[in-house]
Length: 176
Image 1 (cartoon, rainbow, N blue to C red):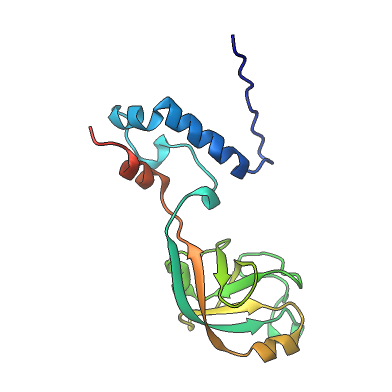
Image 2: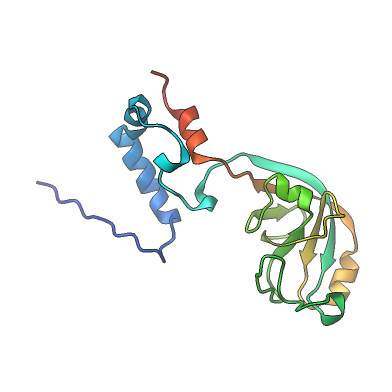
């Protein structure tokens, strides 16, 4: 008889290492097919919650105007190290602020963004005044001269659009 070791998930664990195991269990167990043919509804409450960064989606790209900003006292009326959603900005972070029209198309707080021409992945931690459109601000710590050298330029950004898990199951499940 084969013993199966149960994996205990704690709140501090990351979900990424568990995703292949979970997907394999679902595929081998035929869960998607039996779920689709059952009378259970596919509303949000019927599905387990997954962390948002694990929900698959479509890659999006867009050309935007990019400028740079710093966390210096003279550049804001409040604490220059606190972003719009309460995040603490520290020099060296790869963070950006986005215009509010970009929030509406999926670049919300915590979204991960690649900026063409810059290394690494930037995280949306701040938002801009509502007067701006198709614009990002790249955080450059306290280095004002670096921000001035960056200036204002057009860049291409890319990100993964977040999707609704229930919609993905509806699309992937076989018709009965």
